[in-house]
Image (cartoon, rainbow, N blue to C red; front, side, top):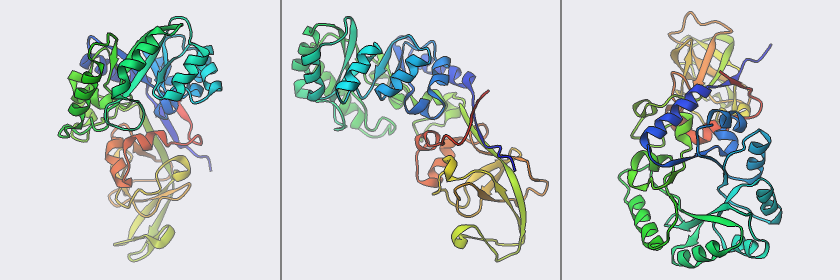
Length: 357
């Protein structure tokens, strides 16, 4: 039995979504975020679709190296910066820009210097309390970085905790704190992630950092991707590999978790948590069989799922099953696993071929 489980990657959709972001931020620069293997879409593949971005942003030096090895010669930013001397030297060899968020990184810069002309992004903690210098240190660290040999310019940045919640006052508080701590510091600024781009235009500043928007997914549960004008970049599909006739009262799958409410057909599709389809998805999770709604019946196994095929009397083995993507937004699937869409697209495993369409 051959296995026809694939993640189709639509590069035209990524380019379209970039244009949507450009429409929201007509004046500023765009740092397109392609970390986590391009949010599961393939980092070099995605980079090829984002040639109009002002720069690409990754999390780690290894991701930066993958982009350089894949042919990206433009500006490149490491959002986590460097954790040790090896990372520091790799960043320099890649001519990457780096975020500096901690005194240990500052000490490495003091000892080793930076590259002539390359920029440093100074990250300030405006209230998320994850990465960033204390706001009270903003002026001193900024002035030290500006005076360092090899530093071309310093860019001021922070990151939002709750920008996907428009009713939460946290984001406006963070913006106010950032503005207070950077008053009088003449530099480009970068605040907005995808949710900031969408919900807080006052945060756009000089450079925005969209991630999830580029892949056709809304960061805001109150605004669908369709409403924003986005197109899904990943469609995860499989096919029916078996159809079984089950009697009322019979149980299906591990733990006998699903009991057939009537005589019915149960379809089996060749995908499971070994492919990144979350094990915690519950019975009732929607799928598409032949472009029509069906639903999960029973637990997700490592390699297989079972489906309620009532209303699909014409379904047969070999028929396509869409798990998310075109026609079935991943945002509607994630809550069935008590997850967020980011987890689902980033979690598709290497066993699933990515096919560019």
